[in-house]
Length: 266
Image (cartoon, rainbow, N blue to C red; front, side):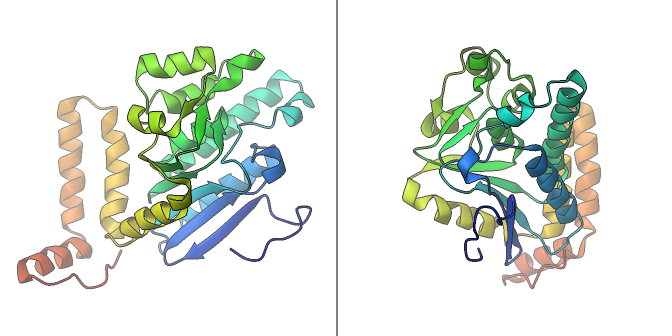
């Protein structure tokens, strides 16, 4: 990343592009990267921009300072106590989370500190997540009289029904090891190894055929809501289209010729 800027001048969302890997870093460290209106808008803009950039192979979402993300900015929310504002805010947040799912490349959550409420939702919305062993996770709105209904959508699609509901009605924290065991994250690693572990995973993904990844990510999530027969029919169509890509032609030729594939075309 570029040299640190004074907090008053630093962007709410920092972006770094390197070797086909884009890192988006939430940059409200004093507020534990709470999702303000402005930060949500910045995330939405960057995700829409990334969706059109064919050179991007993988995206990492991280947080500056002591935490990944502490959820919505409650102080900001209280300043606009209107049903219409709250409805629009949560709808915008939901659209941003869905934009992560719609992005044609994998998105990795790089988690340290805490990921609470909408921050935990953000972890669940990412395709992959790696956390420091000291990280903690909660959907703790219930502790202030607010059931985390929107975070429940992402949480319950990663964690079993009884475990996710328990978190929602108690607000209790779980540690990174438990989050990995329950399926909220892929791995918990030593704090000192977090950056390297995320970098390795991102590089591993960036080395694969972008055409195959684009076909595969879209197929993977769409088939989950289909009946079994429809899922197989859809998967067959996607795989046939994937076979027609230059990347598949080169990759299979390289395999049969016992040589590394040439650069992927995308």
